[in-house]
Length: 451
Image (cartoon, rainbow, N blue to C red; front, side, top):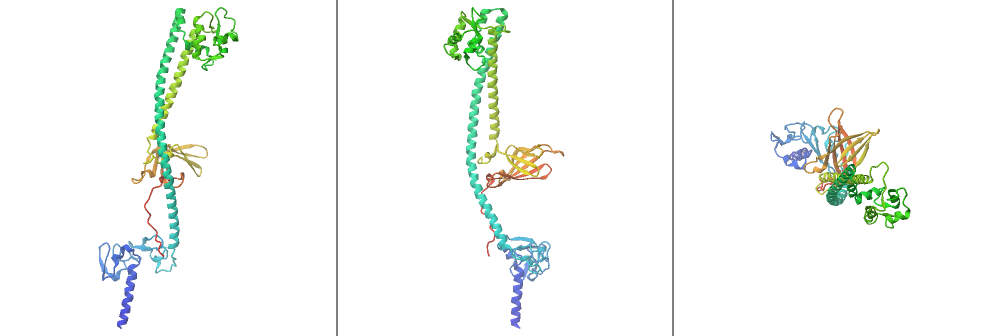
């Protein structure tokens, strides 16, 4: 009889132990040490220990029934050796559906569950290993892009300094050309007044080397040729006769063409003496000197306009470059390489284009392009502010409001636009993969690899 009691006690102890352990994680086992009573984990009630896992809910928090479906708030712990452990609602215990990959939730049901934890663990380990390889390669590429970004940043800074120096030089030229234009207009006005007053002496005084040179330089190439001399210069005593080739060559000092410097030493001296040749009167012109002064004024006005346009262009380039350099390209300028780049992705009948730090567009098959927003700001988490971009103030929607796009940056070994979605009207989200989005991480939580 005593032997039977001992056997029964051993059997009951084992039964209690099995009830105690089932559905409990190792961190909670301290609450289920076999004793005469059991304190509900929320402290609300003390019950006899034999009421643990008796398929009747005594504790409000369900802690007395971790291995049964008796408590509506209960949780069952799947150990899932070889894969990831997790909790399921206790209501799913013995419901005929395999929820735990180790089949522990269907210990007393007709369901024939197989232990698939090892296979699932292998697949997940292979996936994680692949992700870690991608991360390692991405971080390697990111370091290269950081080095390129630093160099590119320095180049942009040097380019800005060069443009600023060019602007300063053009400012000096601009003032000089404005002075010369003013002087040419003054000479033109004086020549006109002299003609109106019939003062030929003043008219002669107002002839300038530059104005006469420009008058004779018909094609404005900066030189006077034999043909141009024969066309514009005549003999003082025989205006009807054209100069011969030799006479024209003699006036040019023996050469076939002369520049302004040589003009001063040759033809200009002859013209100022006025005893052998002069500038031919142009039909329809009141006076050749007035024409020369007029051409000189036009010449200076044209030159001034060219310098003004160059000055304006350089200042626009400076402004554009300053705007680009004012953008936050990351702590190590790692995102700088994305500037001036665009990435496309076709989704159904639309082609989406992301131009980082500029704009996002959508184009349909008919070629109509719609703005989905222009660069706004970084909008990532406090731990990683560079994980999201926001593009704002796109074209208005027909229901009101403007289109916006949120771009999430993910780690990858290449830079590409991966997906585009429109979860709500005119609100777009994009997945943009690039090595510079890769972040060093601590060793990830492992998957059970025990047999």
